[in-house]
Length: 402
Image (cartoon, rainbow, N blue to C red):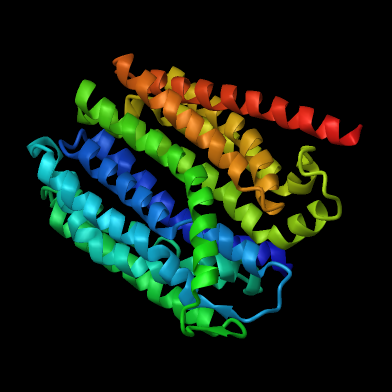
């Protein structure tokens, strides 16, 4: 009934879609009911996702790159050791921020402290390895257990008119992360000729270096979103911050759908692109499935949000800005994903760092107070810098052809 791609994508998308969909619905209900802690709750969840991405240290990407086309045994312990420094940094950062921030951010920091045990267990997540080695990607069904549990907790509090508690929220988030990490680790152990052997310093050093390059490409986008959320929380209040987080949740589902399509079709994309070494030449046809799927979902989400805008008190301009941002991201990220397949991780990292460095100070100094402003500023900086990078890469490609 399903070919391997369709079944892989179904499993990956179902797990992510249910989890992200639950959080999107929860954020929408919090905004619609004007919950006093809507901004704090959604911002805390976003920062948790940011820290999980940091602790992963490029693991999902580097694991796919490491095992694609390779039949060698994989020492999973090396990936764990490569993640220990960012884990330690994250835990110290949480405690430091807790010490130096005021009561306005107490909900967020308490939530993160109670999530810390889950962060520690997340170093056992080897989903990137299973993206390549698992025929039907059943691990995708486990990807968002923490978000599903969080959504159920929040909806229960709303139903019974109980105040959201940061410690309880964080503990539930932690339990969900622990469950996912342990189950994925067990699936990885049984997926092929690999295991947990004695660590080897040389590959750990290589993984740590590659992780730094990959993470500097992934983190800035998350940092921008979380920084904007905090700016809006300060400048415009909890409701506006929650509205922004709601739209970014919708954007998060969009990006996950595209990312999952790439993951499900990774072996085919890898095979098509590596037939030549022209990595500076953009070849979107190799990713046509994910691009078309992204355009379809962007149009669908725009329509749904537009129909619900009055209930959510979100302006048409904000929703339109999100649609533009999604389409621009789809195009630029497709190019950078092609570069990643070729092992060229530093290009996306440089673009992301440049965008983060330029956008955050501008948004802060501009005293941004509306959702539409924040999204448009971020989009203009990101795509403008991408165009500059792309023209440089295109010139290099033409020079190589001569």
